[in-house]
Image (cartoon, rainbow, N blue to C red; front, top):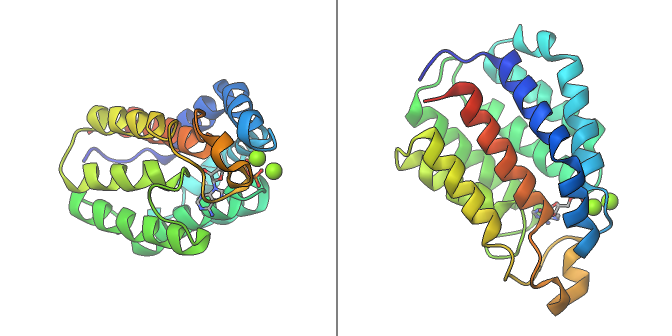
Length: 198
Ligand code: ADP
Ligand code: MG
Ligand code: MG
């Protein structure tokens, strides 16, 4: 993999989330409480504000610190879950990861999110994007292919019935809308791909 420019990665991710905040809010308005865009924007702006400090750390420490910052600033159900993703990734990743290490570390991080959320694939959450992204990473797909897989996986939450999170309170009425956290996860995956390339 190309050398990782963490400051640029953070900038691209924060920019992408900001550009899509209204869309994320609209998705969360349909089957949640309408704060997901604001939650994510607040969290990623907080990370962006300290991007240089994060980028100065070794990658594992940087990811753990980003995870902690997200827990403190995103809020809602998604804050602790995205925070767990980054903290677990930081715990498992090498300072200079190759594809195998990245895929293995990401797999552990996805498991940590599932454990934290007591959730599994098929329940209309961010996990429905995280798991296929892990499989694509482990399967050697390119960054562009992985971004498309993430988009398709978010799209595939539309016909699902929510079994976790606020949307689950709606039961059958959650069917027919995309999960907001699945969409934000796909946006983050695409921005990481954009920032690191292959
Ligand atoms: P809140 O629902 O507290 O307002 P957000 O709107 O920021 O929090 O985030 C909602 C998103 O969090 C959902 O769209 C879903 O993807 C994710 N989510 C919620 N609960 C869980 C869970 N138990 N496991 C995995 N993901 C979850
Ligand atoms: Mg919400
Ligand atoms: Mg909320």
